[in-house]
Amino acid sequence: MTHLQNHITTKKYPHGWFHNEMTEMPAVLGLLEDVKGKKILDLGCGSGIYAKLLTKKGAIVKGFDISPEMIRIAKQENPNLDLKVGTADKIPFNEKFDIVLASLVVHYIKDWSKMFKEIRRVLKDEGILIFSTGNPMSESVERVKYKGKTFRVYGGYFNERKLHYKWDTPTGKTDVFAYHITYETLVNLHTASCVASTTTN
Image 1 (cartoon, one colour):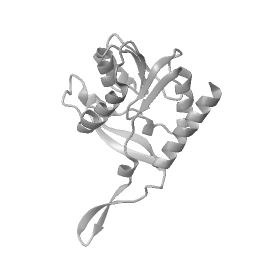
Image 2 (cartoon, helix red, strand yellow):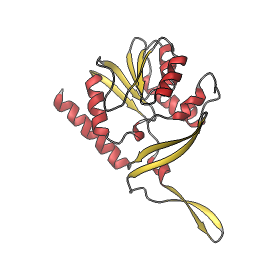
Image 3 (cartoon, helix red, strand yellow):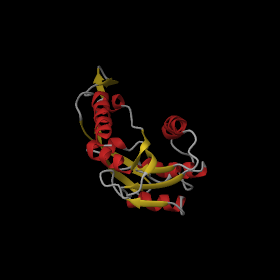
C-alpha cells in the first residue's frame, strides 16, 4: 500500500503535505546528494513526486507501486518514465540500480525479509538503499479521558500489530493498513538484511 496523500502534491493538488515537503523530503534529498546519471528505483512511487524531482536532477528513474490508480497519476505526471504496478516482494524489474528509494512506504509492508531480498536482487553491489518511515512512537498515542478532560498518552508501543486507518482521498474514504513495529525490530530487520547481503554477495 502506498501513501495516497502524495496525490495532493500533483498538478491538481499543488499545495503539498507539510510533513512530506518540510521534513521527510528535504532529509531524503539531502542523503541522495548528486544523482546525475544514477539509476534509481522508486519503490512505492505513489503519484511520482520523487520520480519527477530526481529526473529533473539528472537521474534515470524507474518506479512501481501496488496501486494502479497511483501509477495512472504518476504516468500523467511523468509520461516518459517507466512506471509499473508491482509489489515490494516481487519487484517488476530485473535490471540493477545504483539507488533504491522507498519513501514512507515500508510500514505498509508486512514481510520486510521478502522486501529486502528483492531489493538486494535489483541493487548493485555498491548500491544504496534509502528508506523513510514514520516514528513508531507516534503510532502509540492514545486518547484517555480523565475528569472530563481528554489527554494524549503513549501506550501500546511494544504491541507490534496491524493498524487500520481511513483516509480522505479525492474519490472518497479509503481503508489503509500499516504495520506497527518498534525501533528495536526495525533495526534488527535491517541488520539481518545487511548480514544476509554480505553473506550472499
